[in-house]
Image 1 (cartoon, rainbow, N blue to C red):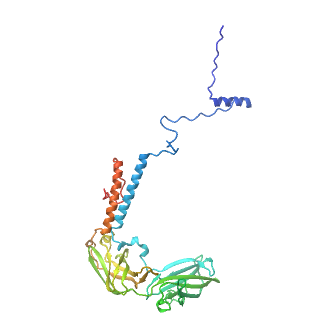
Image 2: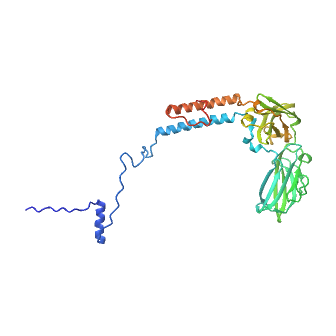
Image 3: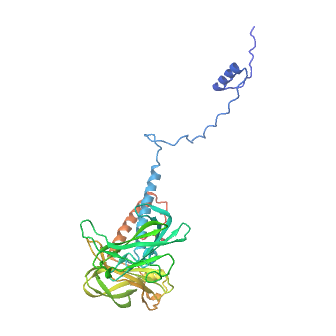
Length: 411
């Protein structure tokens, strides 16, 4: 007689779970904790890992990478074309003052504040030395003013005593030493010192009136002083040229020519060569407006130097006329020598004020030259090539925005 088979309903275990249960019963005499459920498998069609190439590195989407390169090429060509077109719409001799802020006030003193430099080396940071000099480059007939004052960490003036101040030309090894010239510093409200007894001591160097009259190059003025019983030293450098290559006659005229406003300055040239002359222009609101530059070769004798206020620059920036020409400086450029220039006497402050011309009478056309046309043609060719490659690769997508602010001419 066959006995019936008795089937027990036992819970299903994984091999790992069953092994854990048996081990728990043997060791502890009780059931082991039930393990947490395994994570659900990923949906069909979603791989666990990114595709890899033969080297085991993530595979690159070649089409996506190629489009990225073409977009980068197009953007570079567009930036080159647009930035050059915008930057060259005015001539190099007539530029917005906003591009040349460092040249707006060429005759402003050079001021610094540094820890007191001790004689023999080191510094005393509890004392700050305020210094200024009226200029760095000097023509033959010019003088330079120096000043210094000591303050503590709280900004309070500390008593300062000048013990020695000597100017001497810096020479190279093997050349003859130049004379030393003593400079008097005072805090009496006279000469270069505007306020008496304020703790600021000032002195003046006029090389043409000293033994340095014939020296050409860097003149260093070394000032020794004492603060709080400690000896300090500070140096001032200027670049001096003893010859006058050209002088201004004082005659200036204006003319409206080719849609721009020209200032003509007369000069008597003693040394022919290439001259660089700069002038600053303010509009009637007192706004620093433009930096004008002359760069050309002049022959000996009477010459007229033209500084051009470009018409489109006035129109684009809404110049308020009349315009004032101020702070004109110039020099003869010299090659293979130090210093590399011979300075003309500077014209400080207001030099000339134009008539009140109507702004509409000036041209709004961009500056043109053979060089500009050549560069724009070349850059436009590069842009057209880059845009054509990108459109051929992905004709359904528009080109990225142009930096020109409009549809690029190259397309």
